[in-house]
Image 1 (spheres, rainbow, N blue to C red):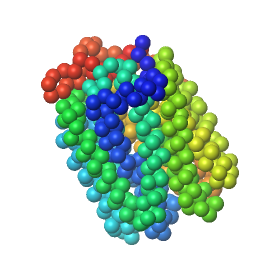
Image 2: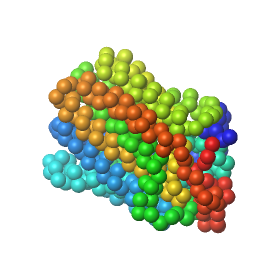
Image 3: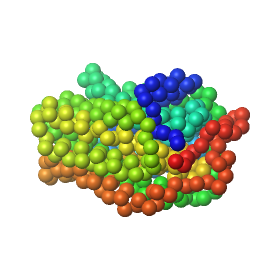
Image 4: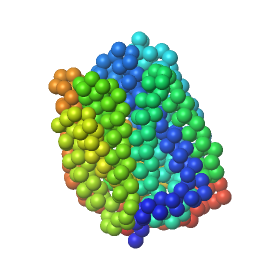
Amino acid sequence: MATEATAHGGYLDILRAPHAARLLTGTLVGRLPNGVGPIALTLFVRDQGGSYTLAGGLIAAYGVATAIGQPLLGRAVDLKGQPRVQLPAAVLSALGMALLALTGIGHLAVAYAAVVIAGLFTPPLEGGLRALWPSVLGREDRVHRAYALDAVAQEVMFTVGPLLLTLLVSLWSPAAALLVINALGVLGALAVVLSEPSRAWRSAPREAHWLGALRSPGLLALLGSFFFVGLALGSITVAALSYADDVGTPSVYGWLMAALGLGALLGGVAYGARPWAGAPEKRLRILVLLLAVCYLPLTLTPGPVAMTGLSVLSGVFLAPVLACAFIVVDRHAPTGTVTEAFSWLVTTFGVGSALGSAVAGPAVELAGTVAGFAVAGAGGLVALLVLLATGRVLGAPVAPAEPAARHAVSAGGPTPVHTEKNTH
């Protein structure tokens, strides 16, 4: 039976594989603009004298645009290959944020148009990387290990990203930070698409269907749950800034967001330190329950030191939830839709995060910081309820009629070790 991860030494085995470290690093740097986007937008709007509601509105527009663009670009990657889609999208997304940084929020129509452009063309690097792992790593157990490493590495980005953003803001300004972060994003995308695996990768043949990956009931169930996980995380972004204002120390905001990422990093490392048996769908329900429980203490809003500790706790189960969800997506995605399926996960998470930000802004202004954090706890609990209600369809992974149809195609022909889904 394949496992999702092995001991820590297994992570080094993954990173030593040809191209693996470059692909992982390039993807993380390329995703940096999107990863810190909500925080960067919040700081930018507040620096220009805008309200929490405006910040939440711009974040929501950015998130919705990203949600629309990700599956469309993901499907384009499956059909056209990675370089022809990823790099142009990264450049257009960066230009959108540059427009916002240079024009400010004085003209709301321009500001909203800028964030919509930035979100709509956010390159699907995350789904693209997971599509590349099988052709780069070969064995199924190594691919599962890479999914766990992927989740851990994301938390490094979500830990370092806010600190880097805070440093750039302190050295220059929120506008300059937007420009630098997005320039780095283009460089990261460039590093990925110029690599041999990215240039050679082709999706497996897919059945023509207008729904694409969404014709899988199990995938739809997972997406429904992750919408509310995203909602919880998005609400924390706004509530944490309100908390920093309450205590009169703006820098606390960056520390709280970094602490949340640190917690997820620690949880991801612990999760990947051992093999896991059994169906990942069942394990995912337990992990989401623990995630929801750890969000609830944030409503206590103690002093900054204790609140930082609670932020670490709130992130502990995020990376394990993501790592487990990657396997579930892989098991339920129809043949030939792997990039699109992973992009739908990003999309759903982004829509939920955008709604969480949009809801938390008015909640904070009407009922205070505690109400903003309460949105997070509620989102986690609803995510669990969705998984419980859809247990039957999640328990039936897609099983293609011909295993050979799951093989990705490189420039030199089929890669026998590449499977887009697996059965335990």
